[in-house]
Amino acid sequence: MTVRRHGVDKAVTEAFAFVLRSTQQRPQTEAEVRAKLVGRGADPAVVDAAVARAHEAGVVDDAAFAAAWVEDRGRVRGYGGARLRQELRRRQVPDPLVEDALAALEERDDLAVATDLARDRLRQLPATLQPEAVARRLHAWLVRRGYGPSLAHRVALDVSGLDRVWD
Image (cartoon, rainbow, N blue to C red; front, top):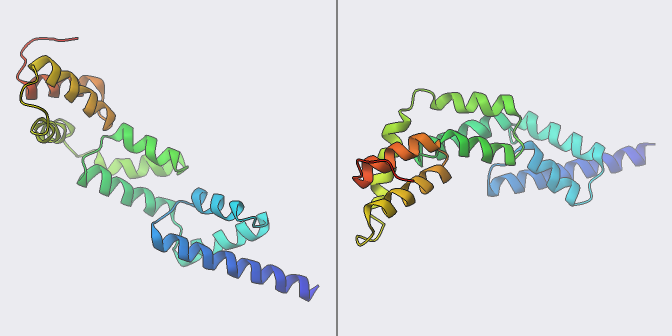
């Protein structure tokens, strides 16, 4: 029995060491870490024990991951809530943690952020584009960044200089 227990302890230690190395490359969610360990052929009990150790060590923390993700991509890069929610769900962060992290953006003025982003994007578009084409491109770009269609429409009209509704 002690030989078998020793083997499990060794497997957990090796799995935990892998988690440490892996998360040094980039922060990861619990689901990502679990998937990597399973992909390496780790026994489910070893995966659970290694993830528990990672939690204790503060190496894996989905709440902190989500908060940092929203700070970087939401505040620094200006992504909208819809895109951030989608990205965090794709990384299998639990929905309550996603919503808690997104709460940090509630005070943000999305109209001002989207307008600034669209103005920056406008400088990258060819000057020969017609205003309607500029507006369409800005609208699509803002929606891809996670802003709602109506906000994207409003900003695209404003930034492109159009004062009429377009399709």
